[in-house]
Amino acid sequence: MEHRTNRRRFLGWSLGLTAGALAGGSSWSRAFAASCGLTPPQAEGPFYPGATKFLPENDLTLVAGAPRSALGEVVFLKGTVMDSQCKPLADANVEIWQACASGRYNHSRDPNPAPIDPYFKYWGEAFTNERGEYDFKTIIPGAYPAASGWTRPPHIHFRVAKLGYQELITQMYFAGEKLNAEDRILRSLSPADRAKVTVEFKGQNEFSGETIRVGRFDITMMPVPG
Ligand SMILES: [Fe+2]
Image 1 (cartoon, protein in one colour):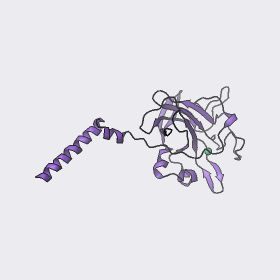
Image 2 (cartoon, helix red, strand yellow):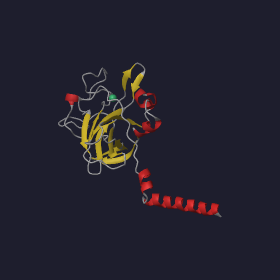
Image 3 (cartoon, protein in one colour):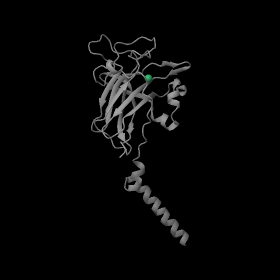
Image 4 (tube, helix red, strand yellow):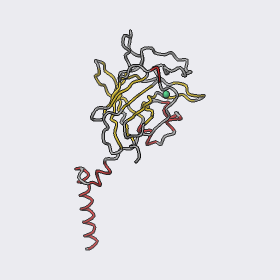
């Protein structure tokens, strides 16, 4: 009987916990539910744009006064910046930089002979809103040679800054790209971290009168210790 009683107690506790978890009612369940894995940092690379930045805008596809928009497939990139408890962080500074459709950076140190696209912005900046959200309109960058036997897959570099949090420098990849599997930087991450920085672009979204694929890259920052 004692055994049964204990078992009932255990089941009751277990069921209560499940109900609490569903309702978000217990502090234990909230603690476990509200845990957002940190976004892994990755190498900054040599092509941060420095003096070649355009205006701080979140549309990289259109240069003012240009006769055409940027080459390449236009995509809409959005996400939420959060802390490790999944709390959205407002007013976080999100910078991105990337190659154009040919795989060339607008940087004097880029040895890639591929042509520059003068009508692509290469760099963009956004600040998260009160819900921690940011967005960019950009293009899928080209792959480029990094070293002998190593071609970097299409990727977008990120720098995210917010007072009270450690600056995050990382890179985002496009799901389905064959070169992802061989990339030395992406492969240096654990499978779980690779999944965090690999984004699927799908569906269609009306944005500024165009129909484009959309990807979501959520970012989790680490507080400054102390
Ligand atoms: Fe790069």
